[in-house]
Length: 422
Ligand code: SDX
Image (tube, rainbow, N blue to C red; front, side, top):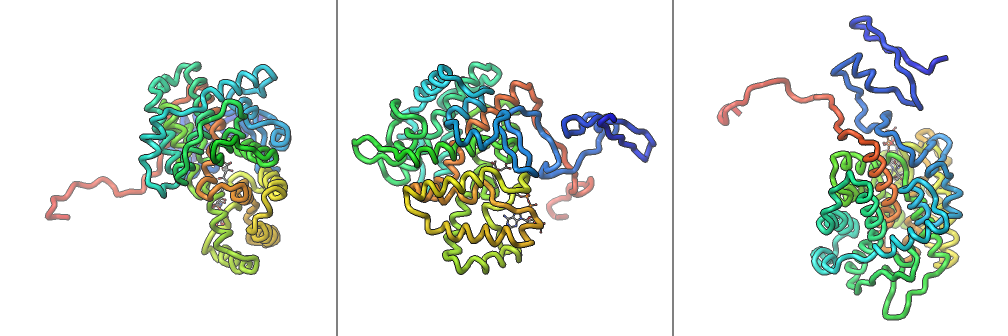
């Protein structure tokens, strides 16, 4: 039987048959039948905005695959740079390709001295690290004006390397500035994640010794955050990129969306929520407040996953390995109790609310020594290859500029009154 639907305009009796293609209805056929009639879908929850070969999600089954590989396999057996290569170049690198890729990224890691002296030093001492990072990413576009040549694939490839390479350097520098610490320059002898941890936490002249368990946990967390299909920040990247803006302002816009507490800012909000709950005995009262609509259970719920977020499961397992090194985070018991209550309570079950990637990640970050305001910065480092892969894919597809329609609800046509008539 043909996979089609038939739409009839009962005002004219005219009908059209529209094929269902990969779970979508082609809006062009709709436009032809019903010009000037729009789908009303403000948060795009029933709208496909792109064809993409990068990431596959099945929210009902709790599946996540990057270029066809299950996240559970990638998270346990590949490094973040291998996954970044997979996302932006389409395949996992072989030995020689990985060696060349690592070298490209390492060489591009340093940032211009003016960045430290003129841009980072321009912020208030108490500036939030995400505000510094979002501004700094956009400022990068002033250092590389050639990045506007977005139709040149080689130029795009060069900017993709620069952004992946420099994100940890700028992120760590934002932290060092806020702590009044001297900047630590990238060390070409260190791998990507070791280099980031050293730029963050190195003190004095002695080489920074990276704990292998913390290194592997950080690298895996970057992998888990690397991409997630058409989420809010990636959609932002595709929309801004569709205007042919340069990749720096495009990624800055995406990071701005990620900063929101409903999105990547949730990992910071979870820690603030756990700290506010304060102790195990306050969990039930807090959950009563959630069910009364007084507040949200941050780190729970997802537009796509109506099952356990597969990343949350991996993060939770990783937490125990990190705590073996750092000592258990005292807030863990509160988090575990919140999850236990939520998974048994009809309010959350009926709404299919499960822990998402942000629920446990902050506990790890805090135990590793990151301040709460750096949590979404860590998400940004991880998500950068994903945003860039979608940006590159959108340009390769020669996508048209994103420009949705609206349902107008304002006043009808009227004449302008004089100031005395108003
Ligand atoms: C990320 O899209 C992605 O892929 C994002 C992400 C990625 O990798 O890019 O996975 C990363 O952003 C994860 C989500 C992080 N955000 C949070 O943890 C913030 C808390 N969660 C909620 O704000 C909410 O769940 C969202 C924003 C994540 C999803 O919102 P939706 O899909 O618009 O769901 P909704 O608001 O329509 O909720 C449906 C119902 C409502 O109740 P009713 O009106 O039906 O009675 O569920 C309730 C909501 O009030 N609800 C919650 C809740 N989330 C939804 N109630 C309490 N606590 C919550 N967290």
